[in-house]
Length: 320
Image (cartoon, rainbow, N blue to C red; front, top):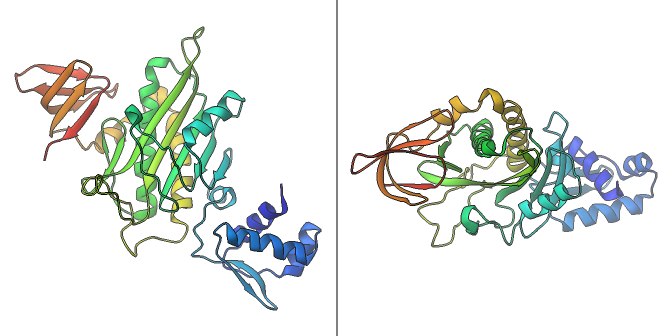
């Protein structure tokens, strides 16, 4: 572990409290000048650090730059967190790690994505410092047909994580979007590699993009997208706390896919049951009423001609 990371972990462990340069130098067996240089490097990376003569250094409570140390302190253990300043896509980064043999529950989190994407390769708006862009590597022992349940688990995990930090209610739009107040705050993209011999998954990567902090969206997203926190609402370490809560809840539900533990909460938070929607699913398309959501996360819909269909995949948009 590099000195800079050691310093950051120490400062994170007692955020808001001052530690003298002498104490830090002694703890890591380096000179006070080396401590000073690495603190300055951390400041250039966006960490808000206060330096006071005769008191030392303190990571300020309002510092919001993401770090593995800042997220892991909220976790119970068993995760490997990697934080990047920017990347094309966290899903792509996680797939490279998966192919190289990285363990399950490796999480890749970025401050910014330049090629973030959702379903059907649609671009996902990922500005620096405003959102939480993360991908989690899973190696579940489930049949390939149950891949949809991973996305459902992630949707519930995101809703519960958001609610635990913001105290605001979040809903799920089948199959992979999280909404608040009628607007999208999160998109989820699960990509998998299959084992031909076993018929199961070699691994799955769950990509999660959450609009966390108040920001101005591009014109094409205004009126459709929102952030978890409005102006002036954002709490200290909000993104780190949400990231940790998502990981903990996702591990809980993915470990219980066989029991469908996620299902009751997934259905309870459904944003579409009982609504009229526009359906696009394979060769099916048109306006329909959503009647129910079954235990396989299939959507039961009734089209205008009275025909009732179960949708296992596709997309629905809510009609206002």
